[in-house]
Length: 112
Image (cartoon, rainbow, N blue to C red; front, side):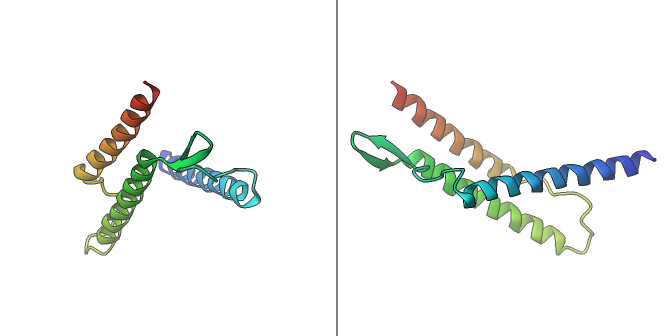
């Protein structure tokens, strides 16, 4: 077996493993074994309150993923064939890092 064939086999193996893990998580959520109720809220006294840090983190993540999918689609539509995934723009990476920092800062402030 050549090195290129081994690398190709490893790539497909990792892809199959990731898809299997996605399936396990989806099956757990749909089957009720993984509970997602209240994932964007915090307990405050007797009730629940929306946690803005979690909501902003989710919204920024969805935005960054959508922007990257658009980047990939544009690269696939180019005249040059796509041989590897394009690098994400630096602004998207910085936005995602800032979002994570806001979330962690909110967690730290709430612990004080």
